[in-house]
Length: 248
Image 1: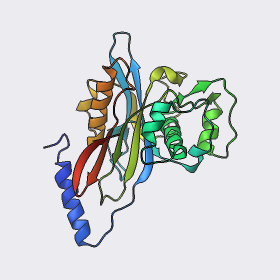
Image 2 (image 1 turned 90 degrees about the horizontal axis):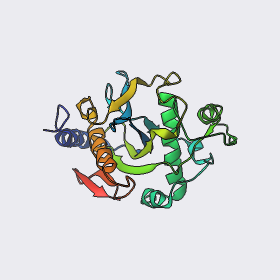
Image 3 (image 1 turned 90 degrees about the vertical axis):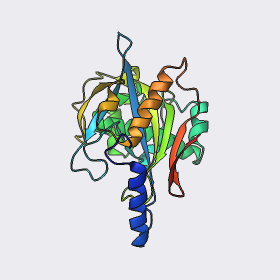
């Protein structure tokens, strides 16, 4: 049995079998990005920023997650202060062009701002022109996004035959890159409830999606390394009806 109440592999198999029997095609996954913000307290204990999805959400209701969401067309049109580091770009570009790779990273920062009100980037840089309302609000605070602070830590594609599917890339960044009060979530959209900094060693006890359990383990593993950015990126995907872990 998995960490969830039901076995996700069996549930996926049953769901897929029923959909195929009904002649329904698999939904094409949408590109999405998630940001894991990590804070280290004075006692050396790590915390991660999480929130609870509303009960009314059709995708993962009531689950605790990291901020994130779908890529928006404007995410590829904003020029960040600094781009992705070469090693991160190389791994992100496995299966997608550089323009999409950058858009994914930008989406992680924008979605974090929308869902938590927190600004990840560089203060004092000249704002970029944009017609995107979310990005205009972001930069109205005197902050411009920067991508060289991000590490790429995981990728996961929602199993086939779900009503909503995402090809999600998970990024990690240190909380020191938050401009302003890291506890001030008053500007959050309300999409996530109970937003708070969760001790990393306690996060697994929350009601989490299966992939979030896995990402937390990966973040914990990386934080034990001298350089968290080093190492392969795990990629979780369903092939031929079986959930597999590959590496990027």
